[in-house]
Image (cartoon, rainbow over all chains, first blue to last red; front, side, top):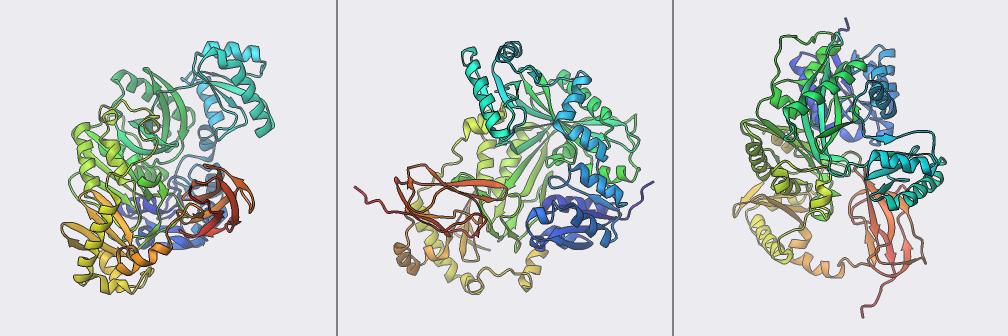
Length: 499
Length: 121
């Protein structure tokens, strides 16, 4: 039985804090494997031990397998939690951990390879007869065959370069009359961009919802699901708002999709927390991919089910977590998560960086905040712009939406701009309120980002008056001299952080 | 943090942050003081000077001095927080100088490209 008492965390920000808290509750010590840029962060202040594994650039620190392994070993850790992003879905990292005698908190390297790789996951699903997006991936690449397949799949169809990615060599066919040109042009682009003119066809889902199922494999290999989340509000494939459970599923669909998720997890010999993603359109669901790790939006599942997925991960890695057959899991109420990004919503979402001033998350029943940075910390341009997550729970979806809007309005973040006004607009949109939003919701309703409603000259005048009063109140004098201090040694900082 | 006229007000570095109701905004202190108002005039943003809108890394440079550019043409690409941001020309003119180089880590407001001024009609 793998025993460990010290867990290394190969991550940063709010998820590192989340893992530290779960470890603390289980009486485990932590080692934060951090970059030079992250010494002013909550995770750094909270971890039992910490070790710098490299400079700010992710390739040299958070993505550097050997640096993480060496750091964990040097600090006497016996296990590694990869969080999400960075090395969390890297099978080589999982394998390297085991090789070095470190317990990787997650599925086996083999399970990551089988389910995490899109091609092999699809092959496995196809063999098991699980529903995939209808398509054609055959060797016969003649235009006649491809045309025939387009008709079989049914319009609209998307032509994709088999070797491609990033939108290149991708053509949409909306009418049969465009089909020949679209196929030939995709083949040409594929040839010039990737050196192979091979293309595949896929049904284009133009009004799909993103629904995912949380799965969890216990120490014995038994896989169960922990119901669904909906994450249709996305911008450039980046999720913004997630909720549990989905407002779009009938009990029949929920049962069927749950069964598919569990089947896939069981086939992939899955251990620990994972997510099976689906697209849902016109009452039909299609398997999208499997994320072989903890998910950013895991808290909404925790809130409706009353579970702690990170503790479950740690216990599973210690072979102490076994599903109880008699356990009845029924989601209750509704939970919503908003991702708070450091960006300026009024300027097309351009990243916003800098020294944080006051950061205040309004307390209240069933409100939860996951955050990695506080007053005095600096948000840099090296990493992901997500600085916090706000999560609420309430008896019903409408009440949860109302609560979230209240929470966002009462939150204060000074020092960087955030997407909070953008989130409030989305939550107030009729399509979000009635739950019919699809993955094209943002593109359809907020293509140009947010437009500011105030008159710039008036606001500036008001600000000038406030600044005069601010100076007159004596507040300006003290802080004015010490501009941009990195406050690391400031006596004020410890005071602020104590609040 | 101070509360002035029911607004939350705080100076962070050289920036004044204000929250009124659910709205948050900020101004550089220099733009709010009377001295700054005078200074600002000589330094008004103009479309012929392309500056970094955020701190980050330059990942692509599409133009060189002497190139003709049109309205909406991409001049260079910056990256910050895993996001790409394309800086475009608002003028139809030629490029005067390019100071930004690939892989440069630049601060917000850094001058990256100067375009030849176009006289208004």
